[in-house]
Length: 58
Image 1 (tube, rainbow, N blue to C red):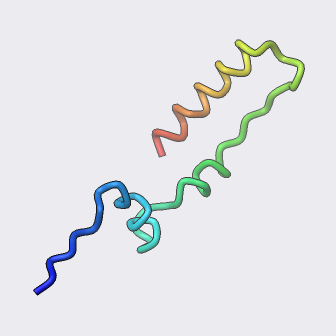
Image 2 (cartoon, helix red, strand yellow; image 1 turned 180 degrees about the horizontal axis):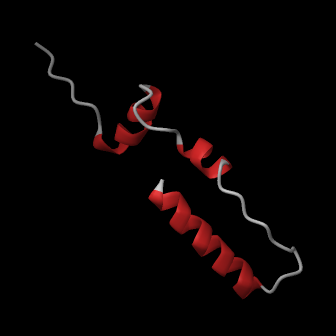
């Protein structure tokens, strides 16, 4: 008997494939960030960090 176990690093992918979790690209696509391309890099990173907090909560 073959006792195949799915690799742990694929768990999120497999859960999304089985429609048990949303895929990360759909979560990412749903998070909007308004920014000005001429903003200082520090400000852009702050916006990025805030958006990542939202991403991790979903």
